[in-house]
Length: 251
Length: 74
Image (cartoon, rainbow over all chains, first blue to last red):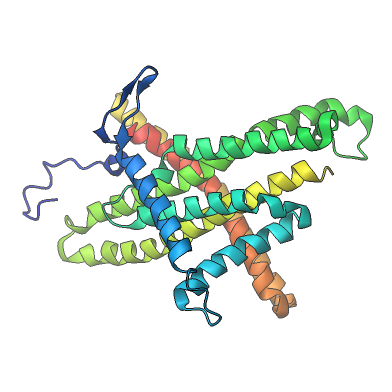
């Protein structure tokens, strides 16, 4: 934004401009244009950061860990503890899946907090793809473990039979809305947070000297956003655990 | 009514839903304080659950906010 007083009324900066996708390279295929966009670039950066962080920090394997090694061991323990608390022993084999999802969402959110970078989790198609993988995987897991009896998930045990016509549709809708609520939660948090930052950033220059107030607010809000970035990754992981728990242990 | 005016009014109406989330977050933290007051030893365990509940309830407010943004800018 220009710093001269008369200029910034002419410039139109939408707070949603940061979410625009711009392709860097086009790959024409039979099914359409598979472009390499800034969203793809940010995902590649995220995967690289995760891979480098988790391999470089533990390759010394020292008994007295350095700070970085401690960080990667903590992230491992955190998810292992989470799975142990929610699913139990049977959940151990789903650890790589949940850990990958957690780290991808967490580092993706954190990469998005870097100024001028791109937040790919603020696009519903990305979060919806992640949530559908969880949803389809959990449904297949449930039918594979229990077969036809998996439908008992829709009818809580000990229910009087005349309640069934009311409760089964409700449970079915709530089951089918899982991927939507899971994806919209993450997407809406990221979209709203980053939009709010940009809206308040737009107040700083026009207010002149009083602009330090919105500036201070932005600093506080950035701290909150980093907390939210972590919390949303945590919520995504814990809900995945709960869904897997539902599929393994029918109630 | 002009389209722009209708959009602004609609966005304003859409964020009314945030009220419910405000009540919810207030409830969560009042229960948290009550729980810690009764059993201070359980603080760290209750705090993680509080944060989880906070994130889940806050997401509901953001659904309303996203609808407002879609009306306003979409």
